[in-house]
Length: 194
Image (tube, rainbow, N blue to C red; front, top):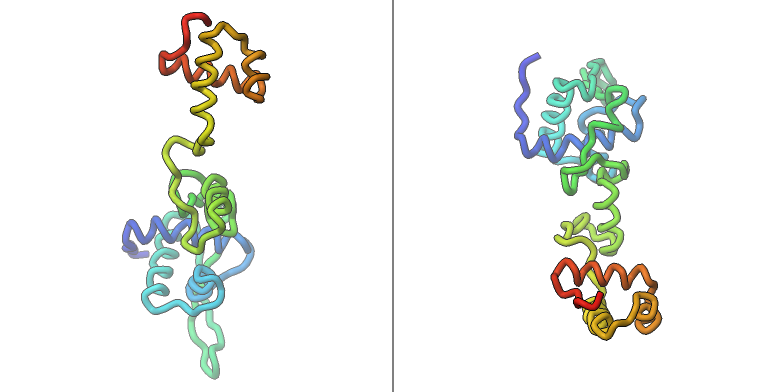
């Protein structure tokens, strides 16, 4: 079989999505048009360009051993035409797909082709149609009063109060006060009385 050229970015975007579509029904055979239709949500018919990209992606995936194809005759209207059908290779559906949003982790949410963190961000953002928002740097945003409590902890430590006494004063668990003390120590603001 001749080497098939599909753009690197097109293939990188399409391959995980095609794996998800074919992985939903690993025993069924799909035409390229049926795969393209599933990629569009099952409602629309793919344009010629979309169908061509899907076909190039499937051929490249076949070269990589991710899918297999068979060609056979099928009745279309009053005529019979040769149609190529595609099926995912056994064992691929679980391991070959990467998150189509961040491209870093294996896709675990098979319906959307996303990793769990991307799916969680998407749900927290209100399920936008554009997909999951990009991850914010620094992890989860802190509550606005956290810094105020850290500074209050510094003042109470300077007065010589203990961890549990500070916890009762601030109305937080003792482990939270310990966390505040670690944050102060990282910044070099922990009072010498500790």
